[in-house]
View (cartoon, rainbow, N blue to C red):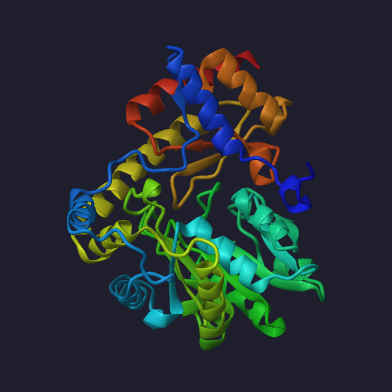
Amino acid sequence: MDIASRATILTPSLTLSIDSKAKAMKADGLDVCSFGAGEPDFDTPDHIKAAAMAALDGGFTKYTPSSGIPKLREAISEKFLADNGLDYKPHQVIVSNGAKHSCFNAILATIEPGDEVIIPAPYWLSYPEMVRLAGGEPVFVQTTEENGWKMTAQQFEDAMTPLTKMVIINTPGNPTGAVYTRAELEAIVAVAEEEGIIILSDEIYEKLTYDDVKHVSVASLSPEAYDLTITINGFSKAYAMTGWRLGYLGAPESIARAIDSLQSHSTSNPCSFAQQGGIAALKGDQQAVTDMREEFQLRRDYMFSRLSAIKGISVVKPQGAFYMLVNISKLSLTSQNFADRLLSKANVAVVPGIAFGDDRTIRFSYATSMDVIKKGLDRFEEFCRTL
């Protein structure tokens, strides 16, 4: 039976593959230290779970409007204004089945066959696959450690062609933990404004920044930026709600309408009772978010101090998210070979950088306990000595 070409061009997710292999080894009784997870290791706060359980008990289990229940869209609209300085009306807010779904909807609604989408590398591995599914062409801009793994406005301009339709900005970023400054974003926006380039701004890690670094929403920079930008966010990272599959976006009215139509014919609507949990997350006590961020910062500081002391590798201190990208190029192994050997010989799971478009690197996640971090880094340091 023939398979559609759009399905055959996709590359399987290496992050999920590594995570599955590590879990299988654990199931076989092996002591594996896994740094592959892209999700908080904390439980969802109790008041959020209580809201969803109350919704279930109350029979809130039917279809909802395709773009989310009005109360949640209103709560997100209020959140955008209070936290980000963005005046998205509720009808400009589309609630989806996760921020990944929001990204895919945004790309599918705006990218046509032949359109080019500029993606800074290293990148979150799903961006180029989404672009290809929409018929577009991903154009990668390689960033460097010296620039803090961030694309400059000049690099953006140099990569543009008459076919450029969109640029993707992820701040704070996965896999680098990089956070763009206001000045850096203003320079990128100025280039986009000249040619009317759509900006997909993925801000899912916005509440996880460290050292008093402030997150800046791209669409808040100017009226022109607002008109060009689709702002992506969700509940997975800040509220430890990865399995709830609840995300959202804010967009100019025409794009929001198009995405609403797309979603109505694909997933119908986000999970009904999860949406009630989303309202509780936004309107309830935010202390759990602060507690998680503080714990992540402790882990980041410890991991950075350990990795910085290991000969033969280099690392940039991340300012956000919960990832650390390690340059292993001096050790003369591909990232996949390095990750495979590290897992088989030291029982330590990391994600090879080739998954993110940079074969010189591997990604550690510090969304795991300090005990696992200490034990895993001991093993990692000893493994590096053998190379």
